[in-house]
Image (tube, rainbow, N blue to C red):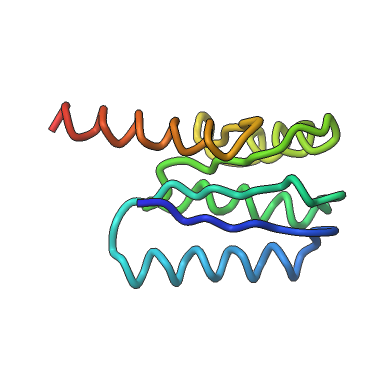
Length: 115
């Protein structure tokens, strides 16, 4: 299952906390592992406390991967930092939403064939 959010403008502590709470609510309501996709194409800045909040999401046992969609170098740098702060190997960056969704489909197919 996927959880998708498109974010806009500058992302600070409060915006990231709202996103995190929405993710937890989604997990609680669906009771399934989730791939969280965050579209950052319209985001100009991610603050340090917001990066920490995103990194905390990677530690939720139900979150299989945290996938960001971005292409700007400063956003890719922020994503790398989130990956370093969070659970290793769970944060990924993609240039397009289609690429992120294809990654999720591939992972979900691999999970079904190994079970």
